Image (cartoon, rainbow, N blue to C red):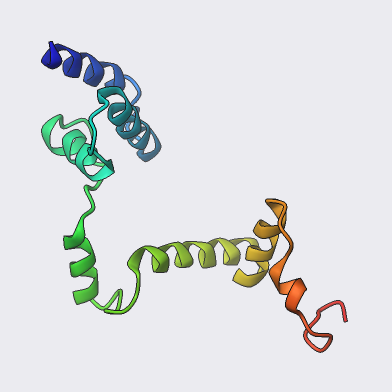
Length: 131
């Protein structure tokens, strides 16, 4: 019975895939949710979708080997948190794309979610751009 359920879920989620990265990610999420397997996360489902089912080559089952490889290549340093560094790089690229500093983008995002702007709370008259 479980094999039939797994096959059904795989067929259903396969219909979601149109060859794009976005749809591959939707397939991963739908498969993870549809199979309801405790302890099976994005890495395991990515491996299932790419290696076992062969549905997409767009996903990468990320694990510690990638962190090790990137550190050996000098992309990250031993004391850096790779996830934080990647997210920070993404925010910096987004800020550059919209033509603001990362700190100003952070202020805008902070403000957009209804919080006080930290830079404004702690700014001094000499540093205040409205000054």
